[in-house]
Image 1 (cartoon, rainbow, N blue to C red):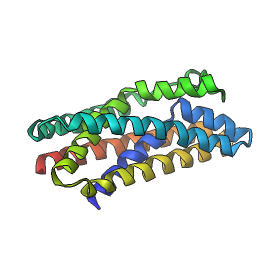
Image 2: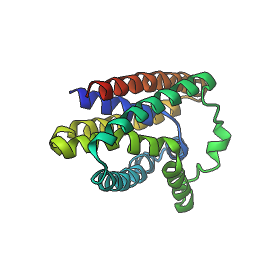
Image 3: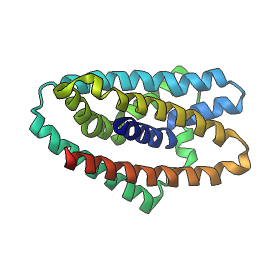
Length: 203
């Protein structure tokens, strides 16, 4: 249950933060094209996560478990640092900047997907958070860490669909709701970072 909650928390944070794929989905919801919106929210991220899972799994097969323990410390510290910085600056990414890629075309979706791949948060999550969890699975059985990834999937995709639907619900509530959503996501990220750091210390 501990790993499921940790994974779900990390997933929810990722699903709440607006990104170019969310903006594409949001434009499709506004046009009443929910099928396309769901595809954009689920399809490309599943491909990206699947690729990162395989790469991380391969990478951590060769990392000594003692070093993995310190990587987990780095992961928790970086997550706390990201959350603190984001709370300080409240992530001033403008809608206009993200809207440049908010066109439902093959090129638009590809550019948005590549932006997701290149995002520092994606690499931090897989290398310093999910990686040590996978290494723990290597040492004690992968069945033990499955709840973390189940929680991550449920949390991320559930939060992505939920936040996109609510942001599309009424233009008057959009900006104010998104500000509260980002604030909640940053606070949750701070709590998840502290929880992960504590877990690394107790292991």
